[in-house]
Length: 114
Image (cartoon, one colour):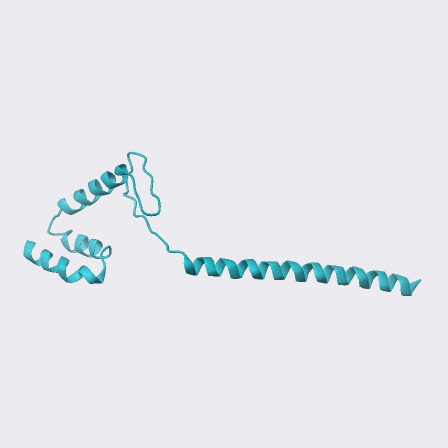
């Protein structure tokens, strides 16, 4: 009686172990695929103006005209409303959006304006 109960419980234990092992292997494969997908895709960051008045759409390589208008309005008001107190802050704020490749061009334009 004890021997049959022991063999029955041992069989159940082996089935549970095999199920957990199969689940863990499946999760490991899925995790590996996600790592490969993350390494192969590019990330895009979309800067949204603080006040959105119209709806717009953004795809991989295209944006709607409404998005361009909203961003243009945001940046022109940001650039044109300058006071002596806010000039350094705005220069640093804008400087965080362009690449180092063009920093010398932009800084030369900034020194010409001041």
